[in-house]
Image 1 (cartoon, one colour):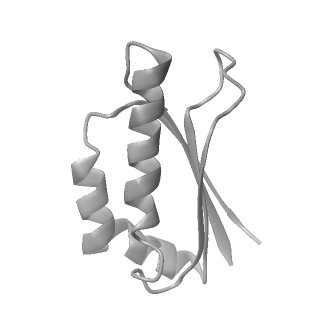
Image 2 (spheres, one colour):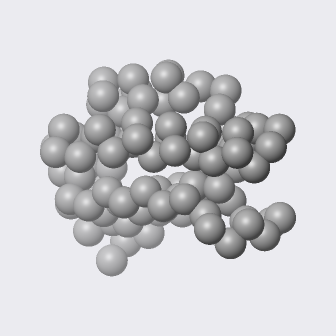
Length: 99
């Protein structure tokens, strides 16, 4: 199994605007559940700490193997979500690790 963790800082002038942007990211990525083969788990969390150095949104996902993660990266549903959210993020961090 491989775990895929992504964290984003999102655009917004106010905390409310950033919260709305984070909710949009959450809602859109949740549409991928049950759609992408090999995607076993998908969780999206929105930061509640409010500390300045925290990311706004985290995606936690598990895949059967590295091939399934690679297939997810180019899956049309995933690409559609990415296109829809283009420009909403100001920073992105990622870690993939084998279990």
